[in-house]
Every structure is written in C-alpha cells, then in structure tokens.
Length: 153
Image 1 (cartoon, rainbow, N blue to C red):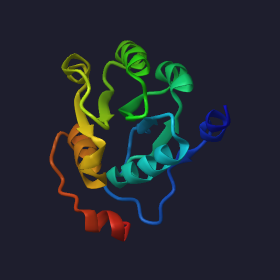
Image 2 (tube, rainbow, N blue to C red):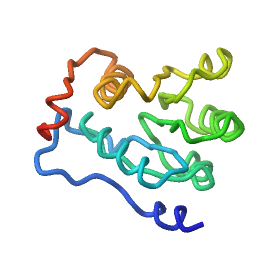
Image 3 (cartoon, rainbow, N blue to C red):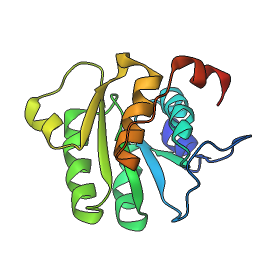
Image 4 (cartoon, helix red, strand yellow):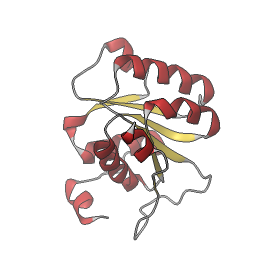
C-alpha cells in the first residue's frame, strides 16, 4: 500500500532542457509497475523521448485507461502475467490508438508479447528503451546512445 500511495501523484514532467519533440496535443507516456524505485528510474529514462511521463501502479492503471489518453503505455517487467493480461485488455478497449510496449526481464509467452505493439527485454538497457519508445511514438528511428542518456541530453 505504501508504494501505491507514493506513486499516485508523481508526474515526471520537469526537466532543465526538454528534449525533442515539443508535445502539442497534451499526450504523454504512462509507465506501469509494482516497484516504486524502478518505476521512477524508468520514468526518468522515458523523459528522453521528449514526452511527459506519468507513473502508476497496476491497481490505478485501469482507471487511468478511461480518463486519459496516452500516446504510449509502458508495462513494466515487475507486473505479473495476470496484471499484464488484464491491463492489456483495458487499454486496448478504452484507448485503442495508444501504443503499448511490454518490458520483460525474461521473454514472456509469444502470444502475450505478440499482443503488444512492441516488447523489449529490460537488460537491453535504457538507450534501447528510449529507442523503442521513439520508434513507437514517432514511427522513426532516432539514435540514442548511452552517453546521451548520461549527459542528460
């Protein structure tokens, strides 16, 4: 319960120099996970796409699927298969234009991974996550190196 309360109102939208692109439609990224520290780190990394990032727990994510429009929803690897399946159905129904990205620690079932717009293994690192998110958000490949992430580009 402590993690849920802690995560509830954290929106990671501030940054010293916003990266590209400028968001015109108010859209943002939603990151869902069970581990508060990991989720906060993932949110900071995803800011490198130039979009505001909101993070939440699986318990709160279902309600958000009907209230907000997200360009990208990132399912964290700390979610159980049941949580992923339940939330996948909710977001596909309530927000069919949102892109859905599954992060995995180990590969999940082909059927589960195939239901997403893309999947990535967490061990591929932060640059690969930003690259995959950029691909989904813009439909193009924008090179991102580990050095750019470390410099706070």
